[in-house]
View (tube, helix red, strand yellow):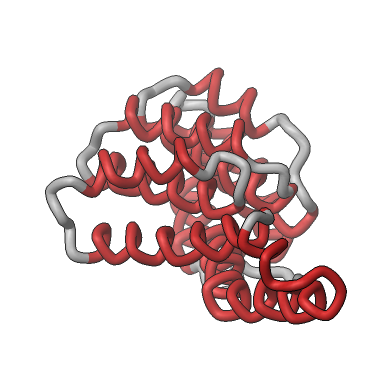
Length: 210
């Protein structure tokens, strides 16, 4: 998978891949299996459950887009029924996003921890940890956020991780550490398509020069 500039782009790419290709991949496996063991086996196999999960996930996300009143309960029910599938992680991300939009950061933290428990993907684990750190910062849990950011991340996340560290340090009024983290983010390519990072560096340069 190519390197993306932000973890939001990464998770959207993963979701798009499964939404666009998941059913065809499953159908291809079904056709391959059909020649050997027949359709009846498919009906009782995990392939069927993956196909059903794909459909149910799309239905659940449509309710999110339309902000249906029972979105949260439907999504949690979906997660409970599909905890062994990648779609459950995406659904937990959606619940976390919904909670952040409502400024319910404790709920967002809960859902991101749920996503961490569900996923076995390194990329999705990294996305969950990065978002978790940002939620912890919103709750002024700065030490917890820095501890979360100290976990192992793929190299493609370095700029986002360092910038988030800088935010945590800045909110603790540790300007030197914040500048070092922002500069590390810039050195890792974080300035590309991210004018906010340059503004943070410029503002700190002025502040520290006074």
